[in-house]
Length: 119
Image 1 (cartoon, one colour):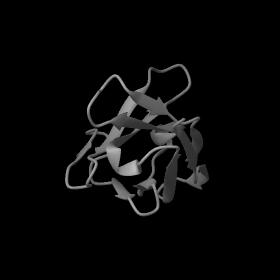
Image 2 (cartoon, rainbow, N blue to C red):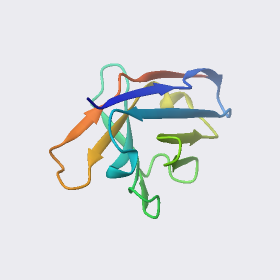
Image 3 (cartoon, rainbow, N blue to C red):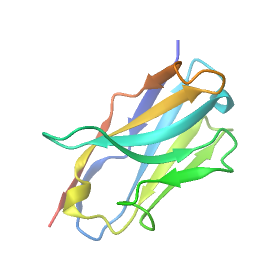
Image 4 (cartoon, one colour):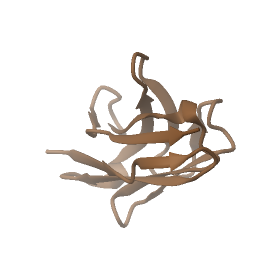
């Protein structure tokens, strides 16, 4: 079965950077578009960034545009989220989501990785 494992979270000062990784196993990585979401305590889950199967198309939430970059390496079955100029309001659990190309109802979530930005 498909499994997603995120890593790279941690504690960083405001203005710092982190790179999150999400490794997919159990299926061809290139069959899935990838996205990152985040959930802060007491708040609803929030879309962060999306990347198409080939990497040609990306999309970002307004709150992270210009600061975050999503990418993928299909040879390594890995999606990345490079986060720069981090702000305390970026503090959240970051989760990756893989959506199968022929069915938006066929998707999988990782377990999440905690990002904490101190002021």
